[in-house]
Image 1 (cartoon, rainbow, N blue to C red):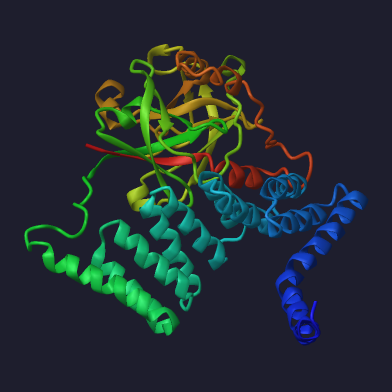
Image 2 (image 1 turned 120 degrees about the horizontal axis):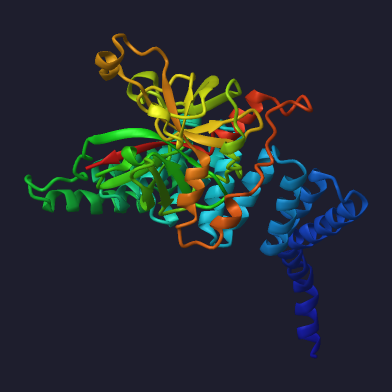
Length: 436
């Protein structure tokens, strides 16, 4: 090497080393963090916080599978660790596993609904799988929580555009520019494109989607496993052109009938997409063991157009082990069943489903009885439900029918209370909306 070359290297070396330090220092920092996190897990293998920290560390160095393993372990140890659900959703999203990301984000929201960031990321994940309506719901929720979240306005504009709602897209894009004008040129290009599209659309050609058809009926249904299957009454979905299952967080998923028992008034539906969050496994109990006088309860959506779309709890007792005219397929129960309750689960005190709430003896029976029936209601027995489930060509169903719920209603510990059970199992209870 010549003297001049050596001299030039002597002058440049400090600059090159400084640049290398700037580029590599975050990586070196996270590698150090990873080693610390691994040591914490070795010392505290049952500590949710240690596994969470290790999961985050793996995520930062791009080791997503290891990140998922330890974030799931943190959740297993501490199921209500909202930030672990959030981070797991983020890792799934970065890894392109959008449906799993959606499930994790919804779990985080169920635990901590006021986090704008979670709603934002959930909205993005929904848009990635083409569920634009659900994406819009959560992007708007993020904005409601944090109105100056420019990226949420920007993303909302993008989703509106994909959904053909061009005017709404323009409004959202303009709001993003108002809050953060740094990226105005790119967003203005989108706005100009949309304005040209709108001009080209003929006045007779609607910009928005046609209005949805009116409801034919509404009722209740319930997911009885980690799968996508819902049990409800057949009369709730009879003659319907489309079926929607609306979850407790307001999100809707399409469903279709895969099995039916018209005489027993039972239908099994299958969701066309994954539920918005993981649900509990509910055991279908042995209805033949039920006795008169046993306490029972249901959770459902009675008269949802009037009473609201939040699940409602009702309780009563078994009045009879047979139904109308001693029909052995039904229980007579005292818990009130209103329009909209149909298809809901009838729980015993052990948290097992021993029937499906079906009907009330209406005022049409006045002529036969000579009086208005008072609180005379019926539920189809779970044994008949199991018979129908056995006809569904899905090998997993035979196992899921008998799966233990893992939820205890009778308190053995303070946390195992009836309100805790209701809160947890409400994720399984859906409002069924049908259209022509």
